[in-house]
Each structure stands twice: as structure tokens, then as C-alpha cells.
Image (tube, rainbow, N blue to C red; front, side):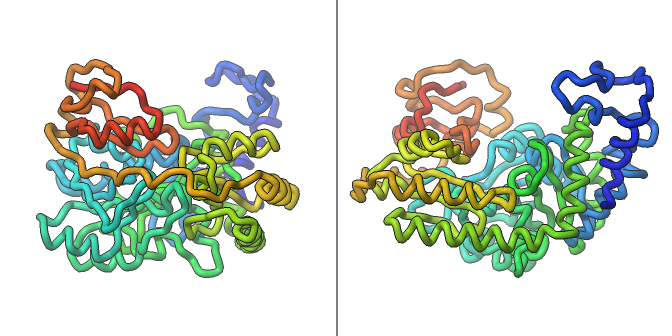
Length: 444
């Protein structure tokens, strides 16, 4: 294997060196991984000014994904999202910029806009999307928005979304190209998309930048993520990327996480595509068996199984609890859906257990309730940054009608906003907050 970060740390751990440097455990086992947990000692390179083993590993990952530059993050895609928007702002000379985005963004996008003082223009797609997780726009939605309003400084989309829906990134990228707007993609759930028989990864669909949460779909420690910059992106994106990322990041990145990213770079270069092909086929077989058993599934993502439980007479939360009794832990549940994520690390026993459990759970097969009310358009009363940094108080949601949202409210998971800082809390918003069991909210 060629994994320079991992090799360096393993050699250091075996060297019996007296550690008069951080961390405080000095490599002595306490949790178990301490010998492999180091800091930026000589030879270990520096994440935000890499010249040695980190630079070598990032180049290898960049080649695997076909990017101009790939940056490692040990603080998840949240750091990458802040960096993407920071790069756009830096390349605009630091002036105030506008980002266009569908409503189903992750909270990290809102936080970045607060910190960078970015105006957001929300895009609302056709149809009534009745989950805060969904709401992908089409290329035509984007075109109409650009023709109707001033062209934004960037378009930010989330694909795949939390429920496994994939956007038409290629079509959206073409529209962005016509208007000269960089396309940024939160691809946190889709690192593996590059290695399908036909790539669906944003780098191959026309995005200027995207983030991948390696830990979500690759065998990487939690917090491991990547920011990819396209070969077609302006050179300024690469020139300022590391400096911008360092603005938001810890000066003590986890070497354990970097080691796992390093091993992933080796894995995706050698063997992952074959393993993924087999796992995707097994996931599709599982979906087929569940559908034949009467379960309603949604979403087109190959490595995600999303059950619309409420169409089968159960809430998603009830179904999740029944699966837990069978020693199966889902990724996510809410009143409507249960989301299960698969990877090549799932065994045949895992799939068989899931199929057996699902097929023996009684289904009333009667729609439990009507669709949730459509996600309402936000009523802006203040800027996001101004509201977030205003004096605020917390009140029960029933008492919030007519108030202005202070700190953005999300359902956790998936950390998608229901009410955004600076927006008025309307009766419709309160209904959605209660649908997701959110009982209190901060207001100005």
C-alpha cells in the first residue's frame, strides 16, 4: 500500500520515541489508539501548508476524483462548506455577495452565511415538497430564477439530499455556465458516486467545487471529509483555498482522521470500485425484496434505502424503533421516513437481517396521515447575520407567531433549517416545527 501519512505515523509509533510534545497522552494506551494519535511534529507535515506526506496524500485523492485540487478536512463537510463560500467571497474581493440555494441546505451553509455576511436568495422548486430534507431544484427552476433576478455570485445545491434524491447536476451546471455562476455542491452523502460504473459525482457533472463527507460512505473515521475544486474552476479558487480553510479550522487537526483519509485514498484507487459495484447490486436487491413485501420506498440514490413508512401505516419513528429491537440501527427517522445507508462494509448478514426484520413487521398498509403541509416561503424581516447576532430569548413555539427568528432552527438530524435567522415565525412555520417535535425557538 502507498499511504504516506499512515506509514509515517505507524513508523513513529513503533520508534519508541520519548514524546515531549502534544497530545497529553504521549502515545500511551488509554482509549486504544493513542500510539497513532500525533500532532504536527517534524516530518508529519502541516495540513494548511502541506509540502510532504499530507500534500502527497491529497494529490493522490485529487487524482482519484479528477479534481484540480483536493483538500482534506478533519472537521467534516461543515468546514468544507464554509471554505467553499469563503473562496467565493475572497475571489469577489471580500465584497458582500449573494448565494442562491434551495431550502434543503445543511445548517453549516447557514452558519457560513452568518459568519461571512452572505445574502441568501432561496430557490423554491415546483411542486409541494413536504419534507424539509427534500426540495431539489431543476435546471429550469434555476434558469427562471436567474432570468428573473440579479444573477447571484454562486449557486449552492445539496445532492444527494438526506432522503436519497439526486439532482440533475449536469443540467444545472449547464445553466450556471451560461450565466457565469459557479456551481457549489454539498455532496456530503455522495463520495462514492465517483466510483460507480458511470460516475455521478459533482466533479464529473460540472460543479466548480463540492464537498464529500468521506466518513459517511467510505471506511473513514467520523469527521473525515474532502473539498474538491474542479479543473475548470477559476485559478483563484485554488490559490486561496488553503488560507481560507484555515480561517475556520482548528490548528490541531486530527491525525487519526487524516490517517483514515489517507488509507481511503489508497482504497478508492485500488479495489473500491469492484466492492462498490457488488454492494450497490446487493442494495438494489434488498430494495426489490422490500418493495415486493409491500414497503413504499423513495429516492434514487444507489446506496440509500429510504422507507416512506407513513404510507404503510406506521410513522418512521415507530418503524425505526421496531428495527432497533432487531438490532438494526437506521441512519435517520422522522414521522414520515426511515433512512438506511449501505456501504461495501455491510455484510450479507446485515442485509439478510434487515430483510427478515422488515418483512415480518405487520403493515396496516393504510396511509397513516396526509402529507405534511408544504414548506412555506420564508418571510424575511432581517438579514441572517444581523438576526443571529442580535439579543435573543427562547420561547415555546406556540408563543412565537409574529416574532423574528434569531438563531436558525433545525431538526437534528438532518440539520436542515425549518426557520432561518431573520425570518418571521408564521402560523405555517409553527405547524412544521411541531411536526418535527421542535418545542422551543430563539427569537429577537
